[in-house]
Image 1 (cartoon, one colour):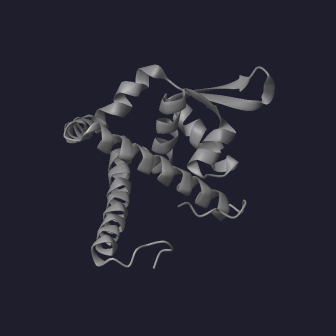
Image 2 (cartoon, rainbow, N blue to C red):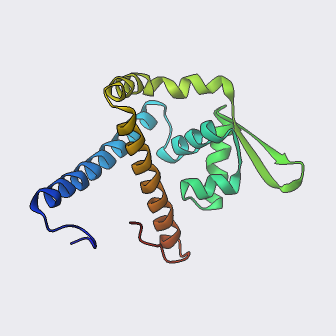
Image 3 (cartoon, rainbow, N blue to C red):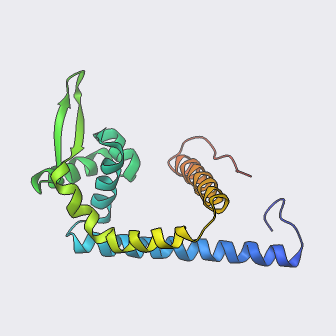
Length: 166
């Protein structure tokens, strides 16, 4: 049993339901990502890279490697492929010529958003039914889960031991 978890049957059942729902959502999210990548003739790593660049604007090749959990050699190949396909530009950092700055080409952004549009509209309708407090709870939950994922990734990559979050 998870530390600090109540032995109350209703709470234990609710937590088990939440964990099951989280695992299923994670699985379906991955299946969805693969389907989107296939539709765009990309790999899932390509798609993750492009999504990351859409969020941050520009990033170094090293940052892309960290975000996608790929080696620098694999990222170099991926960025070359995405550049040849016209999705990104890659330029040397004027402050440090060893670093490569990668940027999503703005004219390709709409093409990348299109497969998500129907899903995003459904998600907006779903969220409209939530109170402000419920939305804030979900944001806190996602923020905490992201922190846990980052800590576990660090641990799996050989970094410091991940701290268990409460």
